[in-house]
Length: 238
Image (tube, one colour):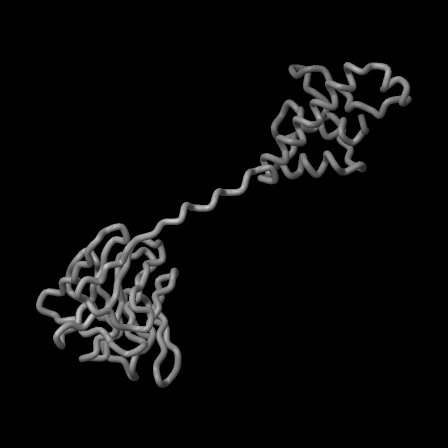
């Protein structure tokens, strides 16, 4: 057995955890580092007797003469090496690909408008789109596995999403909110899919708001004629 492997095993088997390797990677590195050495710490009177780290065999003939010892030592080396690699994730199997899921999107009599038509929430659970029917505008959404879209109730506050190529609503990262641009006031609004009236995010924009996007960090970015802006999704100063 190479001397450095004997030293590595001695350190791995130290009685006190503090005297062993700190991580599995350290153990794996020592098993392939031919210069690695380890001196067994002296035991206290109450501890077991000190055992010297195994030294290199005095001769190849002496080592080869004991096949059983050689086999057991080799088996121990393989077990520790594989344990170290498994702890490091080297031998972990790749994660299986998620199954492909397909859903029919029946728009019924709803006419979706916007650049992307139907928006998908970042977590893939929900769909939403803006629609205009008989001169009235609204937002619709559904769970991806459901059959019908439901209109977002806004109480006495009408929703007027934009209907240009930049008129798509945008989901919050958790899929619980939609942000959109109100045509009448040109304000950036947000509305909860759980219900309730829309709330202003940017109530009085200095310029027209286009292409709002709700990021994972909770910030909504949008473009305008005077630049690109960012505002907290809960509202604030852009």
